[in-house]
Image (cartoon, rainbow, N blue to C red):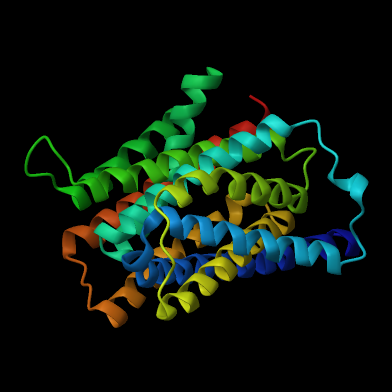
Length: 302
């Protein structure tokens, strides 16, 4: 092997290591966000909490753009405004349903359902893009849904509203991911976050004022933590994927489930049963299998 090839391999290994670190930071921030939601949602409810989260995130992103000399107005011109709008709509549905699920379920379980997004991606791709995935993808989806069934364990044909909205958050999370992939070739991460923050603020205003309630003094800190942590989570996620292939580092994103469950146990005494833990393991394995094979094939254009 030549010196140049060795250097390139070392660079790739370093990028994967650094990319994995960013994904771990993102997962940690998502877990922190879950703790903040758990603390605040009992006071002001999911709808108003989403509004405050969007407002804080918007001002943070605008502040970063204005403070940086790297960005000019022309860099934010776009021909994919419909994709940005679709991502915002899907992400808003994720936030509303996830925040509601957190208010009804244990934090670890709610984060787990949010993390089911990857297993919905091949299903949505088949329905809307007529993209039939490989057999391994569907095996992964089956394994993941076995894991979900271990967690849900419905005693009748009905499931709780918390579980339902948890699954909805995963479904729309998958739709949002597909939208991001569809415009990632031309839209930078900063541009995506810029339009995302604007649309989310606008979309969250009507429902927020319909159910408006000023937060209690004790709720301001969790709201601030939520705004900062979710913004940092999105930044670290984009940064990690810009350094290394998603299929090599994505698994670290499931670290948020472990951190959230640990935080919920320490903060609220929430315990996870053996079946729930087993279900989480199945979901992570299945989602990993489905995402890896699906994304690899999508990148190859087959």
